[in-house]
Length: 294
Ligand SMILES: [Zn+2]
Figure 1 (cartoon, rainbow, N blue to C red):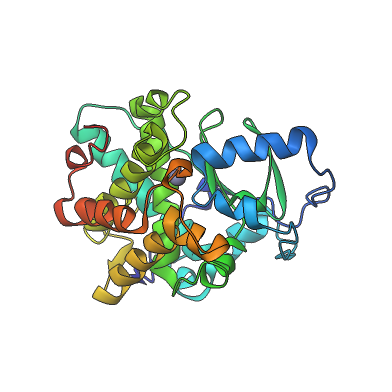
Figure 2: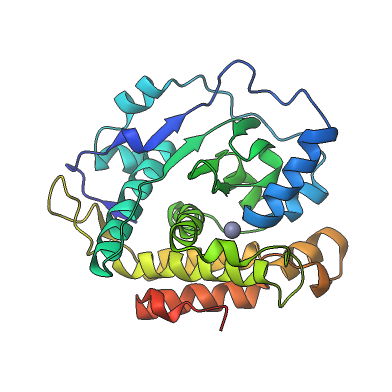
């Protein structure tokens, strides 16, 4: 994964709430616990983490203000060097693509900002802990990431990781944003569990949308430069994204956590399904091919 070194990054698309006072998880169970489960079931990449977590998520802990992020992440060259700048650049690329794609379809894209946090975060969907994994809150139209998740992904979940594995996760959450804008998210209702559930279909479609962006990532121009911000994706990058998608499959997570799988409790789809739908999006580059509800 390579970036246009000279391209300016738009730091206004990411809010940095890492290291803020009060960000530590101090309230256990009760309302916080319940909300955490709900957010995880519908929107997280990896709800099973909640079930197997001992709650001791390692704090990333660097006190970084929004102004510091803006100062640190100026250009594509910074995205080559720093993980947080790379996430920011990925968000910039995703939004340029979806903006253009919605316009092409006579739709209107509304930008969604990303929030970086440590441990715990307040959202319009309630308070969530890092244990839910990355998630999207439809009520405030924001994607939330504790960057410590990427260590969980390569550690507990056994993924190979790498820059484009992380970009896949970001793209998946923006897939949920697209679903929020198109109204597909409202289809889930109470059908939130099981291999054939609407929840699983929603998650697989988000994987497909991540693949659609991937297809176009190196050809989508940024408004600021007229050039693509991402200049290169290798076969290795794509393989790492597929590997990440497989690592957050329900069957894989259940197998690692309990030694068996139970499709009746699936919320995101199997490893094979997640890889298959990402591939469908990536091969075709066409969101119309992502009808997982068919
Ligand atoms: Zn999801």
